[in-house]
Length: 273
Image (cartoon, rainbow, N blue to C red):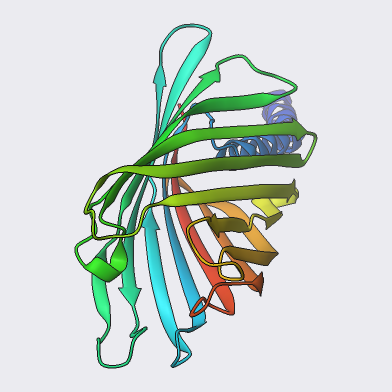
């Protein structure tokens, strides 16, 4: 009988220890998920990732057609020293372009590839930043899908992480310096602000519109000014962490034949150290 009581006491103690440890394990997992979400929202985080961002643009061209742009955006950080990282961010767009001029037909293929190299402090705390060059390569498989110009310029990113908030901006401007002389010169500006609020269980709300200006276009056709936002969530398939996101934007201003609004669906594969 004494041995049976000892066994029961040991079993009860083990059960209490398991239940006592469970909240701590749950809190640790929740903290890890939130930190992963913040890293996914940081353009210069020292983490390999592969975002697949699909933008569906509505009411494009004279026929109010649908344009689709799938941006394949691998991010690869390189450690230069204990104090500095180099973040390589590539955007390879795969584009379905509806007919913009009657009789020309639609096009589908690869657009111009964009590469940005951010030099960023490895130990930044209050203000996280990165600066470097951005290059645009004339890789488009169809004339309507690219500029047929080699372009380059400066790029800047800056952000801060405060509690559940990740807030920052990214900006660049590129100018053409070589390419087909019969095509228009390139002088294009891009500005993206991003505001993220992270919640429990990997959920977050986000606003990350991309504002652009084509300085070579006529007045009234230069700016695309979207406004909107959406939601996202960090989740796992097996051991693979992913970041899913859905956002919608309405264009307050747009060039001729530009879209009225955009639906952005993104799936980002995350590879934390």
